[in-house]
Image (tube, rainbow, N blue to C red):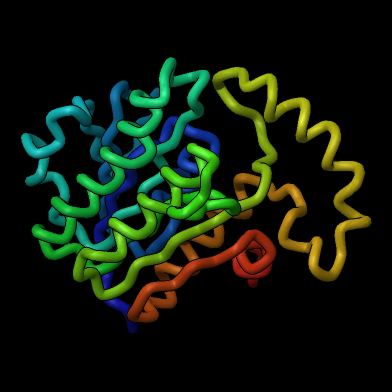
Length: 223
């Protein structure tokens, strides 16, 4: 029988993070769930400890990271962030700092959402940042690192992302035609990604694991 554990989630106000937070609170695996973010969420639960923090000063909140499993769902877009530098800060700096401080607090597992096209050697800025983030997170001595590379995410967002909404409307009807090598490019429900993150953590497989979108879909729909 697995011991009851504690979890921390960063980015619970996002599309995947919102689903994942609800799953963590529902799961008997976790006795307490800490959510860190820039604003308080309209959610009250006996297992939930909300901490409003400034990610520019994450070190000041390092004591909150003394948990078993950390789930990082931080992410933005260059347009939403306002500049490449601001995007890099959210999608790389904050994520890697979270991994650094978590490892120092003895966190066992670190799970993070990346992107299907992550590649540190890419000439495309977005892909390069995601790839560098993955490389840097892998440097820390967690018992397990789980990296999730979803395709286009489906679901209702709080903030409007016109480009992604257009792509969703275009790609969703075509998804049934995407078989074989194209399977990993199918749009995927954010809730499925959240399910996969929880399932991977429950398995407690040591080492570094990277899940591409079609593998996430299988893991996230497992019974």
